[in-house]
Structure formats: C-alpha cells, structure tokens
View 1 (cartoon, one colour):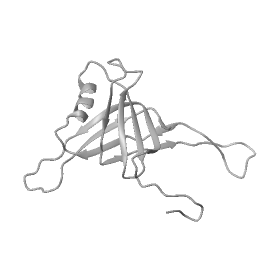
View 2: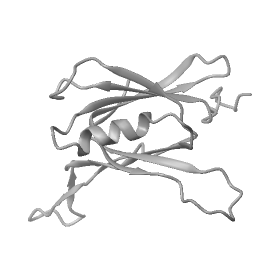
View 3: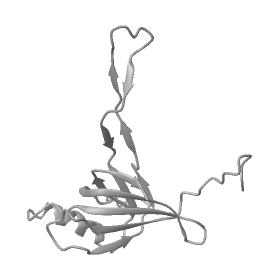
View 4: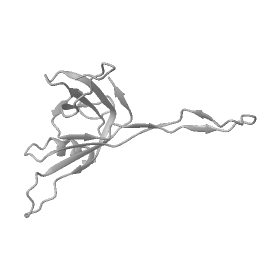
Length: 155
C-alpha cells in the first residue's frame, strides 16, 4: 500500500523492547533482558519555546528553543507468571541504588525485521502496577511498568 507520495504508513502493532544496564548504573553492567508488551505509550518529547520580546520589533516576539521535557513511558502487557517487570522495579526500590537502564523499543515489519528504533537514555522504573483483582471480572489482567528517562533518541 502506498500513498500519492510513495510513503507507506507503518503498522504499529509489532514491536519489541530490550532493557539493558546503563553506564550510570551502580550494579551489574551489561545485563540485558528482552520483553514483550501489548502496548507502549509516552514516546514523546516536548520543547518549551522561549519568547523574547525585543524593543523595536513590533511584528511579534522572537521565538527561541528552550528546554526539552520527556513524557513517562508506560509499558503494558497481559499478566503472566514471568516476574521480569517486578524484578526491574524492585531493584530500584530495594534501597541499594537506583539503577539506570537503556530501554530500546524497536518497531518491526511483517517479517519481524526492524523498521524504526528508539532509545530511552538513563531510564529509571518509577511505577509498577499489577492488575486489579476482581472475582466478577472476565477481562485479561494488565500489568504496567512506568519509566522516566533523560533522553529520547531515534536510532
């Protein structure tokens, strides 16, 4: 499928996530784990423009680049017996150190080949949420892992 300009829209439902120890971590270096998720939200960077009003410039204020902030990235998946998400979060809350991680999100094509890759620099897990338990419910339980980070780059 292509558009008039020859641009093919990407399907966003195939992706993989790799979590690796960052160089800032005080713990074991180079350890890596790959995880599967149903949803990833928060791949977002926002630049706050700085408005500068200059004397004699009557047609509007000058706009300059300001600081960049990053959204919290949230990964969601169906509950399973794998405790990997809890272990990543628990390392941060153990009181020994707050490990920093490099999180790599790779968008895949139909043949599972990489199309686009993003990296979260110096990511730190800040929230783990287990599914609500409800004896009357019939839906699949979802657990979440939230990361704050110091940089979003497209590789």
